[in-house]
Length: 389
Image (cartoon, rainbow, N blue to C red; front, top):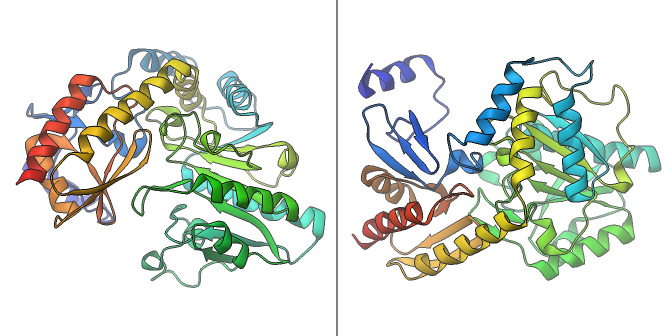
């Protein structure tokens, strides 16, 4: 089956929910991908921040294969070692006290929304269920997480959306204005990935945390995209000097397998009890084995490498033609372009052998944490050529 036949089959049988780029991903190594016909691509997307250590990572494959050779699924009616070991790793590395496993970032955020409302119900009774999120936020595509998402462009077709959400400007004054007696939680992305890779101001975030603690409003941090080393710390909140009550993560956690996690800190550790929530596939032992391999190797040395690679890329990107600004944290980078359409630039990059993503009207770069200097240089060269045209 050649590429034309593949596209025809895809169009015939798969729901048309994705505006796919015209490339096939067949195999690869590290941050270099290949199509079946042999064309190579430098990967500055990592499957939207999922392939933390690139593709064909040996240690990750060994961990996953070892678990597949034992049992691929057991359900949450029984105990499995990979799940318990991964939960312990997450708690010890973050200070969280309990973890709930799901399959995706949206599900991790659904769990956080339910837990925030139950915490408030248990303590204050009915009526205190309102959650403040930010304008231009993105929290998922389920009905609850879409309701939590602060983008008007996504609030159509599927009405009615869930009640109890409002959207604040991304600063302390905006959040305080939206909070009231019925507010149970504030939910933040510290770097808003889907809307342009915009990092929140650390001082504003600290003011929000202080306000939330004073009012017993839970602070929920959505680290679905920013987590697991992506921003140069294990989780972005660690750079902001805050302690959330709930943290959600997914994407890069399992290095390419579907896994989400909702981490509960001291105040919320006993909020969910038997029967309050559940997931058939959540905490699948194969996915957890892969995640334990990833998480155990995100150490101080690797994070310093991520910070160094970020500085290297940002320096070069800031000098490129038609770049007005560079945003984001770590290896989560946004490029504001002058007189260039981001989608068209991404398509031209792909033609020349570079995978980049878009976020609204910006380019978004999310290379594997282990991207080599040679791969960075090759990708930056191609991007510079495209932006120079």
